[in-house]
Length: 125
Image (cartoon, rainbow, N blue to C red; front, top):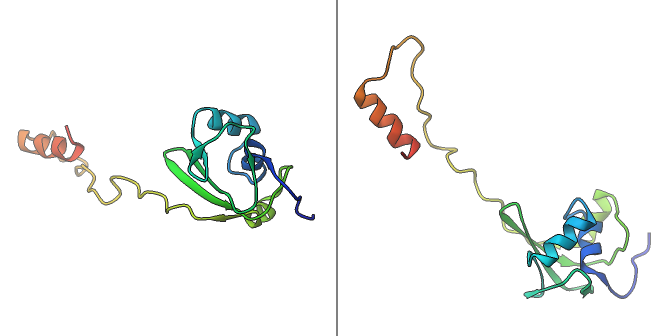
């Protein structure tokens, strides 16, 4: 598959390289201001070219992709990975991963008032 020359709509490209599941979701993200090209908010029909930086904010994280190849139709995952350079920051660590769980031994009976205070403090109440 030879790379297409010129430019393509930003919503079509975002969908084609599998940054969103559907083209309508890509267009909705553009209309909501979640897609930026070279730092500017764009409409779904904005044309992008090779070398443009596309920033997509979704699910609480930001994806940063530098366009290295223009595609107009949805492509497979291995081909999609070749169409952009991923400069996204690493995903945030899950909160509470290192926090101790408030668990009691089975059969230890009801928690005391002190135990309840410690449990509430762990849960952030």
